[in-house]
Amino acid sequence: MVLGSLESQIMGVLWNAGKPLTVRETLEALNQDRKPPLAYTTVLTVMSRLAEKGALTRTSKGRGHAYVPAADDEAALAVQGVLRTYGDAAVSYFLDRAATDPALRGRLQALLGEDS
Image (cartoon, rainbow, N blue to C red):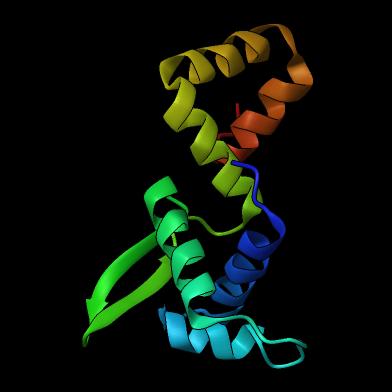
């Protein structure tokens, strides 16, 4: 998933927060050094769309929602997007490549925590 500029900024705030944030909390963080400030409705719309895309997870909090990233960073988010879009075909591609590319096979084994 490729993020737009404001999407990246919102995700950055949430990744750095390390806890669920409401739209208002995210807006306050974004507007700290911004002139002119973003509108609440702008951030609400972008965060809602990020949740619809699977980049954020939303839970009820009071009358609104709290949001957390669905992935640890932008690279993980991109991988999730590829897997969501291409599913087994994406996994098969990497496994086929690993069968003929020792360097890739080694990297995959290291990621999986395997020694051989």
